[in-house]
Length: 315
Ligand code: PLP
Image (cartoon, rainbow, N blue to C red):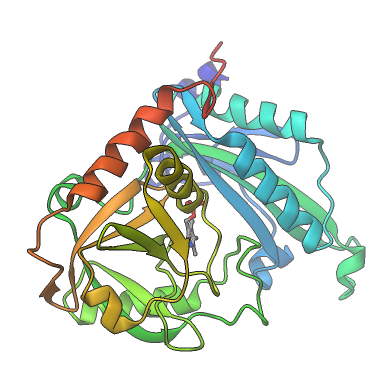
């Protein structure tokens, strides 16, 4: 496999320019392939109707972080969408490991996907579709870059309403991102770096690929309604329990978030990331706060703890 990846030309026989793909390895239809060769049919309902669920776990310094929690969430999503995975949990864990190991990445962004697939007879009945499992490992990526992690992100709150949970259950991790992408464009128009969008009651919901927390008088709060129960969000609850901090899930209004002592966002893509400016106004004194810094430190320390992380088996 390593040979296959290095010996291949920059432009392959299908005229695909490999430089347009991140270095990585995908598993699709039973094969491990370079990212540039991992293709699905345009007739797959995952593509045509966003009929898919997925999960993303990261590898940091050669260790998966909280892989079991990501697999649990993925399994729940697949079951609730009435899909069937072609492999058991152990096999999927080993496929994820192999994608990372074959890519050679020590820090990676690893995605597992189940799409509805398509029916061999082109039936419109989703029960007749053959579900498809895909996985891949590419270099680790973060919502916030190094500079933003140092000084805190600048965020704008968009008027865009997150798709209601009665329409699409946010606990099933999904690609229904038109609201989040619209929020991002709104944020760019407002001169910000990323967005928060609101729930159907006008409270703060989440952003493109992250949950949000506020800290006020030492207490942490994160939205409870209409959001993906993020694994990093859950990790913040676990860290708070260990550190003796109080954290709850409850509504946060626009006024409350702007009056917070500290704000941070959470994602597998970057961990715990500070926010120091919302809608052009500084949060507190505009500096990254002490609770955020402490949680960021604890979060990365846990990446070497065998109770929270699993070693990748490289060849
Ligand atoms: N909210 C949304 C909509 C997401 O897509 C994500 C991650 O991709 C998150 C929150 C954060 O979840 P996690 O901490 O599990 O990465």
